[in-house]
Amino acid sequence: MTKRIAILGSTGSIGTNALKVIDALGAEYKVIALTAHNNAELLAEQVRKFKPKIAVITNPEKLNTLKKLLGPVKTEIYGGDKGLSIAASSEDVDIVIAAVVGAAGLEAILSAAKAGKILAIANKEPLVIAGELLTKIAKQSGAKILPVDSEHSAVFQAMQSGNADEVNRIILTASGGPFRGATAEQIQNATIEQALAHPTWNMGKKITIDSATMMNKALEIIEAKWLFDVPVEKIEVLVHPESIVHSMVEFVDGSIIAQMSEPDMCLPIQYALTFPKRVKGIANRLRLEEIGSLTFEKPDMEVFKALKIGYEVSKTGGTAAAVFNAANEAAVKEFLEGKIKFVNIVEIIEYCLAKHKVKTEATLEELILADNWARNEAKEWLMSKTV
Ligand SMILES: NC(=O)c1ccc[n+]([C@@H]2O[C@H](COP(=O)([O-])OP(=O)(O)OC[C@H]3O[C@@H](n4cnc5c(N)ncnc54)[C@H](OP(=O)(O)O)[C@@H]3O)[C@@H](O)[C@H]2O)c1
Image 1 (cartoon, rainbow, N blue to C red):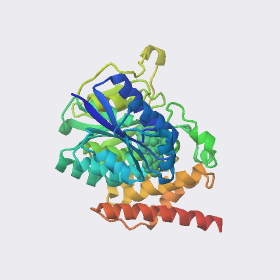
Image 2: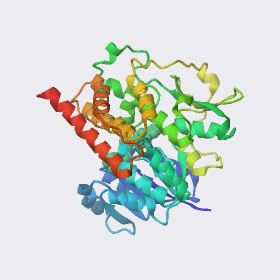
Image 3: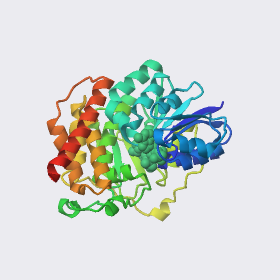
Image 4: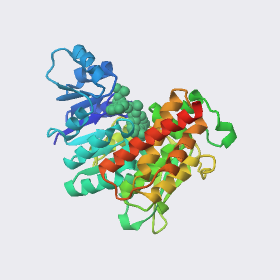
């Protein structure tokens, strides 16, 4: 049976890999919708190649450029954020690959969940912000959420070895990023270049900075809690610099099931698309004899404070995770623009969380309010330092 796919964020690192995977999977997998934010040129190229029914450019200023680049085509072209939800909930779509960056994908993911789609989620931020709401909507509509994040895909694959009530703990692995083993003093003034030099994964800039602060792992703890309905006390993090074991599940009998492969996002993307089947695909093959040894160590939560805060936020629930995520997004943007120091990213997060009054069982409106509030507070923090 044909699987009809929408890719939200088709011009990004996950999006372009998803298109490679789909191309290799053959005619059974059909691209129905593609979306980008700024990159009209690449989107136009993708539209010419995959001939989707829908193309969306969310930055409205780029709509004319996209239309000019494409000329007369059968593809329906939309501009602005609403286009994301149109693509995500189209009747012609079975699977939505959520691969936009940050909170931007939230409403589209919720509309895909309401429409009962299969949601292949790489975009972890919406799950972090609105995990409770999203999983509730998915239960009601029958939408299926499948992880694309490599760690969560690994957990999901390991989970196939037992029942949910037999899980003792989830062990998320972390590469440790470019600053593994560094002291707090050593990374205080880390440059953008140093923070972007990820040792094992080639990803978008935002997630690469999140790996350097280990914020990425903090977000993944919250993501795992919602995806697998497991209390945060049962989720552990181990630093594994080789990035070969993508995560593990320990069952009640003491068996630990790990998923291993080369660090290549094509594999988790493909698994989400073909699940429950496995097919050959294009992912690189792992030769363990070439790796030699695998190492694991406990993360230093005093140096990588974001991780420690992530556990606290996870336990607090409500709007806390929305603030945690938004403050980080705002801070990472400032860091990448050279306006703040590396160490300030976590300071901004702490500042926003300390000022925030948490609302439990929050509605979508309340979550969005908390997100906007935190972004403003992050700006306030910056202004207070520059006046
Ligand atoms: N990269 C990885 O290996 C990896 C692994 C695990 C999880 N993830 C998660 O997957 C998501 C995507 O990561 P990525 O590395 O692929 O990011 P990326 O390379 O920066 O790509 C982001 C995509 O989202 C679009 N986009 C950017 N801002 C947008 C906005 N405001 N509204 C709508 N679309 C927007 C971009 O369009 P333009 O190109 O036009 O700007 C691009 O298509 C993130 O949540 C990340 O945490 C990524």
